[in-house]
Image 1 (cartoon, rainbow, N blue to C red):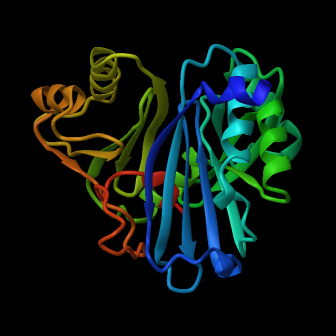
Image 2: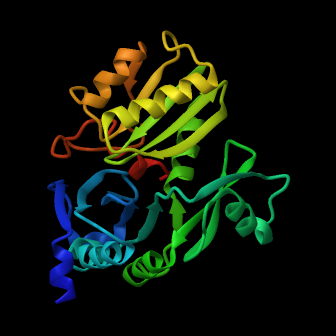
Length: 288
């Protein structure tokens, strides 16, 4: 009964499959799962060739509390046989607004919880982890809801949960050598803003929004606080955003140098795997 009820909170999204995807060869493939409050998206890639074989998304629909979310997540995973194949490699990227960045010179494993508690309203009911920021002298400390982690651990045994934001920062900082750029990762209810100048991270934060007007407020406020020139500093959009959207049109009204980003160069995909090259960026924010 609970499983049936939970299905009411799940909405199927995109599903793309390459004709060369054979489930019986799963030991040769890598499963990458990306999870946030709005959706679960995953890819299957060939470990050796790096070819993208499968991409699928599901959204959470009319979720009112953590219990409904975790029940829907459990049902979402249970009813997708592709998620249960015997993959050679598996990884999970988890997006949360419960995080902080701590300089390496003052960080210790023992004080990670204290640093996060100092910067968050509450960390109750969360397990605390940290990831290295390879191109910044800092650690990314974050919290994972305990019940959500339990669902993931039972579904994907012995898989480390990594911060999606930390992976994003590592990828974007690795390819940025000179000049300045604002990166904006857009998803249905969140935006992640990163400002890089001369290969150094100057600002990063995650915001929740409901309307295009909310979105543009956070974006323009960041430009203002950082003293950025809206006529010259490039704004690069990545994530699930199209040029005809209200968000893009509003952003272009205030920022003149706007463009879309692209997937990392290592991603190989056939014509069957058609989607905009700035979509689903976090699913490819890792070293293959």
